[in-house]
Amino acid sequence: MVVAPGWGDGVCRHCLVGNTHICPNVRWPGFGPVGGFAEFIPVPARYLVKANRRLKFEELAPLTDAGMTPFRGMKKLRDAGALGPGRVIGVLGIGGLGGYAVQYAQLLGGGAKVVAFARNPDKLAIAKNYGADHIINIKDKSSNDIAKELSKATGQADLDAIIDCAGAEQMMQLGFSLLAISGHYVDVGLVGDRVDIPLFPRVSREQTFHGSYWGNNTDLTEVMALAAEDKIRHTINIFRFDQINEHIELLRAGEIVGRAVMKF
Image (cartoon, rainbow, N blue to C red; front, side, top):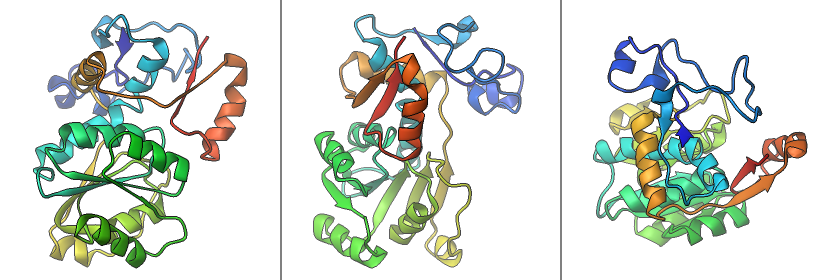
């Protein structure tokens, strides 16, 4: 079993359509009396989701967070009509979430070309291994230079859809500079806390920005189904309980490739 993260009050309009994770009175497991590093926590039965028995703990653990978050975001792009043949989708940031986002772009993209953008060559190599059609290293490059690389790789200098797995100010400025007319931008990353972007192109080019936060029971159930069919691959760094602080520092420095999983 795995645990859906957002526990709602069950009576608000968001809970009544299944989006308990955006309930105004939401509770998060791991916050409060039972800490996030506890070996066991009490869970209401309705937030338990079945998982295939043969999947290992270290394969399941990232899917309730890093695996589910970009999945919901990709569904928003798909449902908005942003994906499909002849479209190009950019995945910004290939960290714990971005590696999964590349895979979902191939699974849900309907034939769209997938381009991964990051600064770390090791992370870009993972994106390529996970099915990215093209990878672009953006370190120390201007948006014009990146657009030229994009045009050379895909035949167009802009992106029809973007899933931002970083949410950093500079990355978002780059993303919006590359977003096509009628393009859709979904952000699931929260590295920064605000962004300064020009307004007129968003209006004149009729672009759409989607916020996407974690996921609900349905999202997690669908992710578990994909995992049971071996359609999701992982890059996992397993560590022990007594190595928590060390790995938090590595995460803060952006030096963890893939996802770190604590195993008791």
